[in-house]
Amino acid sequence: MLFVRFCRSFSSKHSCSWTPFYRFPLFKQSAFTLLELLVCLVLVGVLLVSGAPGLQGWVQRSQADQAQARLLGLLQYARNSALSFGVPVSVCGSRVSGVCDGEWSAGVLIFLDLDGDGQHSGDERVLRVAAGAEQVRVAWRSFGNRPFLQFTPLGFTRGQSGNFTLCVASDPAPLARQLIVSAGGRVRVAVDADGDGQVEDANGDPLRC
Image (cartoon, rainbow, N blue to C red; front, side, top):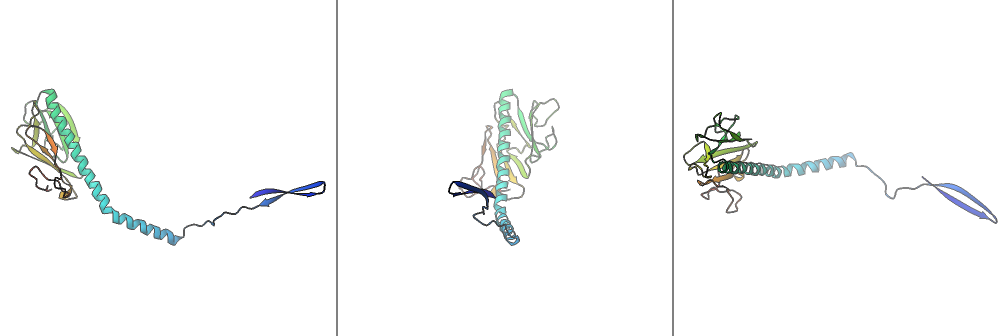
């Protein structure tokens, strides 16, 4: 509420007074009714349900891509370490710290493999221990069927050309990823060469989980 001063003049006399002035809003204010709120909630629920499959697919693709990038970094680190230290460096699947048990999905162990047997001994230095990615399965297959991957001091593998296949536990082939390891020790990412939404292996065949 405002007060406005009004003045009146009578010959030589002036008379002034303060008069209240009420200011009303230009638009009438109103709140949502219960029915309107319920309708809004229903619409939001429909949008969430319809978008859930797409969101879930995006999360799964992100899991697969992150797991692949992480494993690629570990393999490159192992190869560079073999070149730097001048001794064999082995990479193995490991559920229990310091033990090579072939459980690639559970974790990765990288160590200086002084005797070259692919098994970690107490006197062999551990270079890196990494936990596995949640909801991502990892499988290693190579020539010679050795459960570990070893890099020589020259950066080569022990004749172990092969691949790591990564699969999201809750989804089939479209989310499969693969790292291809050459006998020369180089690691490359398998790609979707034909653009059909599914990654192909080294032979050009679609990946299978």
